[in-house]
Image (cartoon, rainbow, N blue to C red; front, side, top):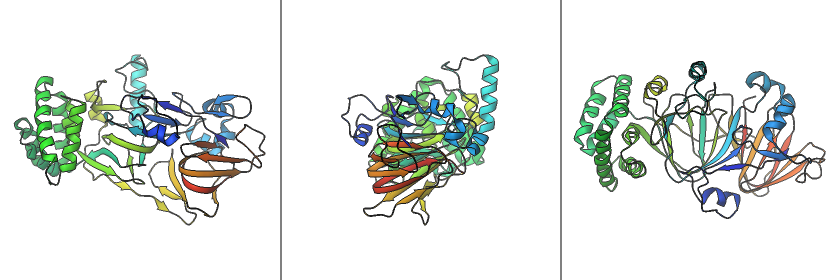
Length: 409
């Protein structure tokens, strides 16, 4: 097992304090948005096995079956199939959606055939993989997730009393659900920019006023008013009004599958996703929005945002169940004096301590880097993480909370 040295990504929407506080370091004053843990080529974690720091991606490439296990390599290839992050949002991320695997393969192949450079700003598909993801709140965490029932959205829009929104209200009431959602989203994203900017302005003023009242949509109105302050005139503000507003409490999570529009607004969370950079944006961004491709990928069906809560088994592992195999996220909450928790050794694992301090003990000889001792003991304080290769046993002791990222065996 190896301690990870991880990279912080300084995106503009990031908090200046949340990740430094987790890591116990002094803030730099600059936004610190994401802490990456894994082997993604954009910012692979680094480890030291006694010969100097080396990227985890290079370690895996040198011995894929030894690090990941033969079964994982057979299913997902010679790479770690997931990326674990700590995400710290102080302002909204772009409204976005991810393709399913078939859409990603088709879209990537088409752009490759057309010769679109991978780093071109108008490129949609950076790779041929899908990007399901799971976000688990460490603090109260606000987001938008999935389409709200069209009748409820019609009620919310009508409450704003903005004349230019009335045609959308009529469509949402009159059409079958999938047609109504598609027609309204298309109209919003293709509207005259000047006219839409005025609609956003008027809707934001009304949402600000209504957020102060004790109505059924007060929290959602407050979120939309905040979006308009961050992205004045952006059609994504109106598109966001079609979505469920969700506030997660610490320990609660959201799973975001293919085709589900979503945006993270504010808060600190642990995020895990399949290893992909495929994002189609719907708004709340100055970046490229490819409306035709977006409409091909979005699932136009309403669904209450399903808040996940962990399910504990007899071993004390609390699992966030999802329908995909590339990642599996769980946590252990160890009280003082708790019995040691043995982790399955069948798959590669990343362990992240988010509170207290925990000790990992495994079946290694201690001949590696400076953090190893005795029979393979590694202590993780708050904000620290470790990689445990497939086949290497690990036992948890201590007092604290640790997230376990692995894949389905």
